Length: 309
Image 1 (tube, rainbow, N blue to C red):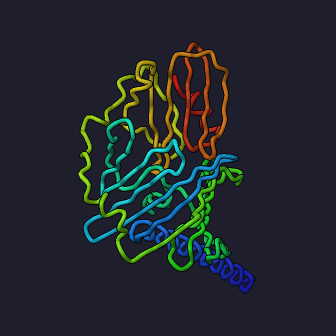
Image 2 (tube, rainbow, N blue to C red; image 1 turned 135 degrees about the vertical axis):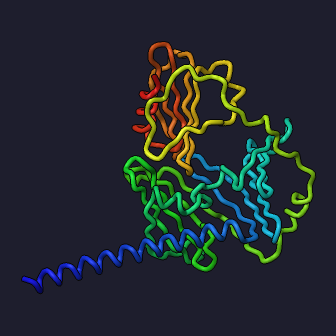
Image 3 (cartoon, rainbow, N blue to C red; image 1 turned 90 degrees about the vertical axis):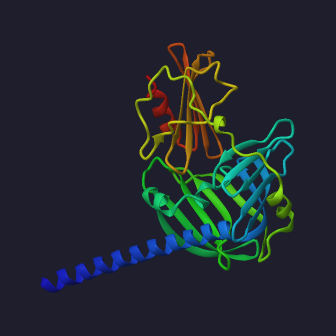
């Protein structure tokens, strides 16, 4: 009997050691991919696939001892150029002055590539997967599986040689694919990209303190929040909606942002749909319309709307 118990304990310890080793290997892969997108000089192109919709971008990044710069260029006609130089992000508009925000990464790029590991460890388990060939390159799979059943999962394929991300799939809580981010061209260089040097030296406006301010309206209360989410106390104002808003909240878990709006009812029926990984939920009741927009499940969006009192 004692031998059987000892054998069982040994098996449990061996399995636990294997799980811990796999988890450590997964987070090592995350460190590798995050190092690649922050430290390498590169010129890459990628597409974002949402159902039948395809958006195409060019992404350039340069890093020197004192300076970091990256440029995100939509290759579709209706996009907005985005430039980040050190801690400032510039939205370059053709018909208006540049909109400037403070930030150390571009929000339109996949957040899992930039969010600190300490935060991701609170939300996900990191599980290395098998290797495969992708666009002629050997790729290593990294699965970020959500610890909470209501949260999306992420599968990342990393270039074995450089750690550069080749593909990122966003999966629903039921493991159904919602959105795909896919590299179509990648060129890494030891030299600082020449086409970024002029932007590095260009005279660009500084962030204006008054550009980010609290929304002036809160007539209702938000009585429920999803796990790990908090309300941002000073979200950017939305001039186009301010005259119609009764309340507005911007929520974040550090990785994602979710907006909740309350406006007078337009007589629309309650409805929900997804644009890739983004859920848009509209609920009308008692003369008010609650809209929830963000990378969350429809069930979580419904609970947020019901939490407005």
